[in-house]
Length: 227
Figure 1: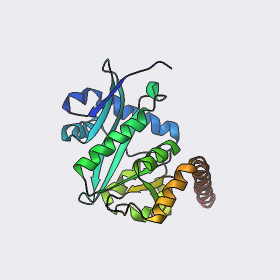
Figure 2: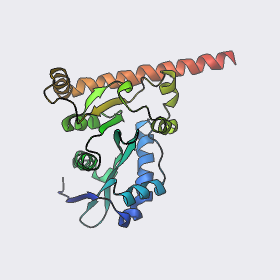
Figure 3: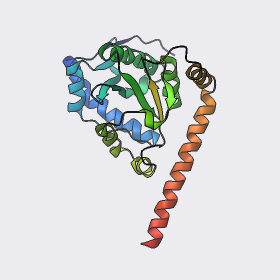
Figure 4: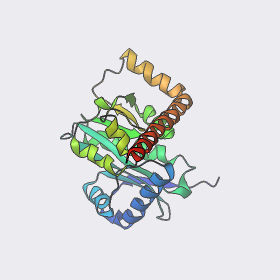
């Protein structure tokens, strides 16, 4: 594989020229995975750039390669690193891990006391989060900010989320708590097991997805029968 040099920096207004490309790739990626993320407009992404709440990856010749931004919820008590996306042609270079590391640093700098959380269906992202200190948690451990959960409405699995009273869905919740005791035995054990069993965990996520989607289809069929 050809070696490519990437520059990962805090995005600023000069990077607005990439906003449409970024949002289009976010949507294409969600469709390809068969899951959904909250749709964002180019204008929204540009706002994040203006606020200094995003990182962007570029090649040495200025080609866009990746992006991720910060969202704050619950009056800043919770922070999410959202919209992680890597251009398809640069997905074999470990770029997602580097972008996640940089947006994590930026989040800690801007919101040092906030809990950082994420929802994902991807085993690769789960592994990266684990390396940064996140642990798998229940949905109840996440923000109760209604605006955050409204963002799930554009996801094709939104009905599953609501059917579970917002306590479970296809995504796995992960959380980094800066105030947690670093030597807390249970959390450390969970984190280490998660790192070692990532493949097994990935299989469990796939099974979870299969079961939930099957149940959702069964309910739809039952509704159609009685209509």
